[in-house]
Image (cartoon, rainbow, N blue to C red; front, side, top):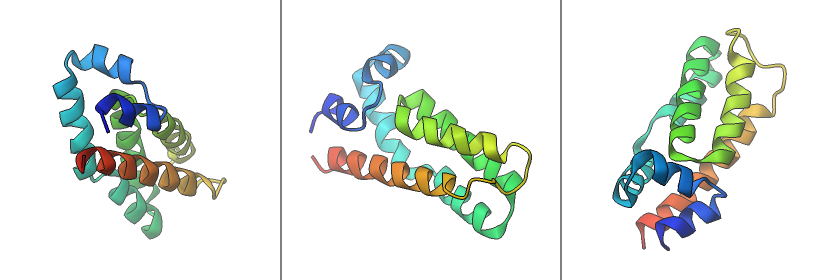
Length: 117
């Protein structure tokens, strides 16, 4: 799988990301580094512990990383969760974390496909 194919499979913004990072090597480097980002793990832990301020911070970080890498679908769901957590309270919509989890896992799976050639 090529990097462009990876982005197409994710319905992500390859051209925009390439424009920001100016080199396919950098796009690939940071796409693969996404696998080591701990924002999602921190989000899950914080939500489970009821620490909604920390969950907000983790969701906001995940949203920013997703935006910078052009992961449009992950950005959209993490943005929705970020806004629901902004007040530091449990979100009224219980499905938001599940949406983020589903899109996060899909993103990781596709990036691992890229990584494994």
